[in-house]
Image 1 (cartoon, one colour):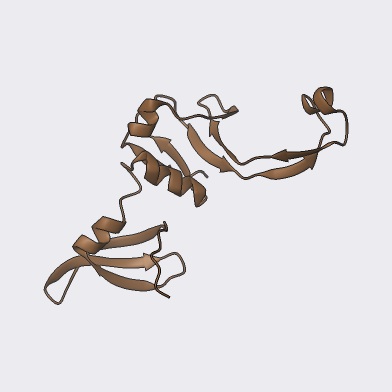
Image 2 (spheres, rainbow, N blue to C red):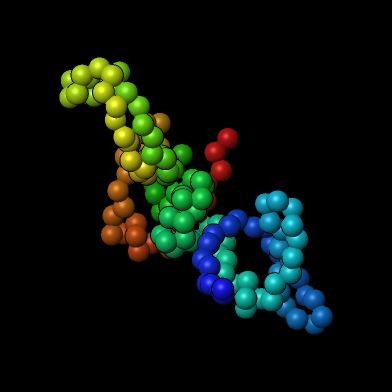
Length: 139
């Protein structure tokens, strides 16, 4: 049965002409190489800089770290914290539930702040409408 698919993957690409047609040579993470016509490629991919919030969110879900070019603080970025389960063994959980109580921690987005702290993050209206999101490489 035929079905439509939507997904995100990070590729390396560069403009390349093939059979007198403009397009892109594409290399996937697993090393697979292909070629795509310009209009097809540009409809499916955007550079890892100057992304929309929706593209940045998909990148987060795929495991990338993202930031806005417009943020003033150096070293700030967002990352996805996957959900987990643990037994309470530290505050504030101990005061709330006692020791050893199972807790299910839902997935969420955290931010590394300019001063190196980590905090839960929520998008502002400005963040959601911005087109200056970029994927960040952290050493």
